[in-house]
Image (cartoon, rainbow over all chains, first blue to last red; front, side, top):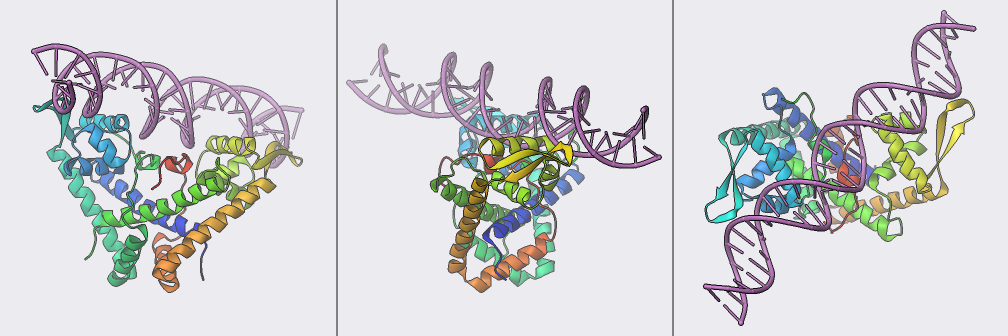
Length: 159
Length: 159
DNA sequence: GTAGTTAGACAACTTGGTTGGCTAATATCT
DNA sequence: AGATATTAGCCAACCAAGTTGTCTAACTAC
């Protein structure tokens, strides 16, 4: 039927939102009411080695000040620690706490469960095909998280 | 291979961003430097009948005040007119101007061209299949445009 | 004709981002 | 060693887009 290009864009956005909104919601229901997807992504980056504000900012394609704000929130809520680097007095070395890893783990689980749900609806082969094509099309272009405001908004109530 | 659910979300986001960033970029190059995707969506809604602030807000799942702000911008830049409704003195009836339609038309063209480019890469049948599945999965869930900050921002560097 | 509803304006505030200027610590160069 | 750069993080000012809440004017209904 050859849809329009704009519709295609909307479908992609819709798919993403559907997953993320569901995940955030589910995470809240499991007791992590104050976590936003952007926190999850940030923690993942920290755990993967972007362990100071500057590097985290670079990793998320965001200014170091913005990264620092996110870090402040994560720190405040006990998801990361910030100790001065013994080798470099300027740096504050970030580390994901046990609680942080707990959230990360749950988040992963939830996303996988959501994917499974999709798999059940269109079939495993089809979903993989879809992913394969998307991967081809999107390629290795880095994904920016600069201002996805709605990723950071509360769905339910904060703590 | 069975990717993770989180990866799937990222793929969808990546696809969307890729299309939208390219479109915004191309639109700017064609001389419409001050148009953001959100403006395009808003004009489309207005043209489709959401011709006052309240209805536009409802259509975009946003408060009427937020819609009014967007309208103010569109008006200022000559993309829509706001005349008092002769039948209802409270309403300001919105109308997309010729210039507005010009942008809309170009936007459509660009999105279709981008879709064509994708089609050339994975094949027409495959792209349609992808769209079909996405449509199934996303369903009729309304897509919200509440705070896609990056949709409204100038893009500094290429993706 | 009076009471209720609705559209839009205005204002205060929130959130997340940006830039720019600053200090202190580290690196580099002569 | 000492002077000079660079770098990490912090702070403050500002911006953009949203929200809620209040107000007025115009329409609607009884």
